Image 1 (cartoon, rainbow, N blue to C red):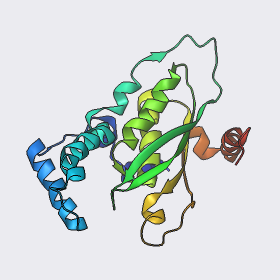
Image 2: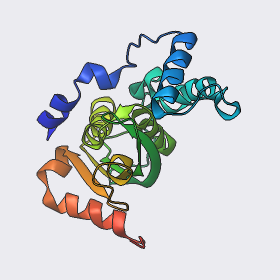
Image 3: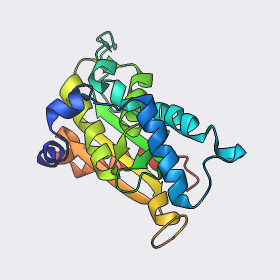
Image 4: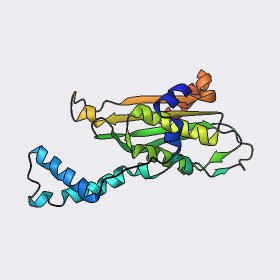
Length: 212
């Protein structure tokens, strides 16, 4: 599975903030104006006059993950853990992302666990890493591997487990148009990869108390 992680997202790419080459505000607004015309609507009508500016602002927020480095979020760790070395699980981390193929939403939740090796990270940092990768154009498979990869490389735990459950609007809103269909992806490294028992424990803990 480690090989899969490297293939989907080279280390340099998920460990660092991406280098971006953004067009100007004027160019973005002109592009949105053209897309509004492409829909068949009139960009000059009252309700759409400010839409190009609003879309540009919304995109900077929804794709803000390109301005952040996930490795930096994991940089501060704690070694005073009173000898704790068992599984740490943060589950039901809600997120929204956008499909890199059609730029429509992916809405779901992530479950992230690791087996510490002498140090732990603040729980909010795990959720933050999920958000950083989610706020980029994505495929669910790549995002799953990216989250596991950066935690493994920065924290160097004995193992990482990541599961993502999400609904893809590119299936619900277009094409096959199947609402409510959920996609599950998972990635395991270290002990989780080598031990089916640890994988079962991870999934069991996720499902504990779940109504689904």
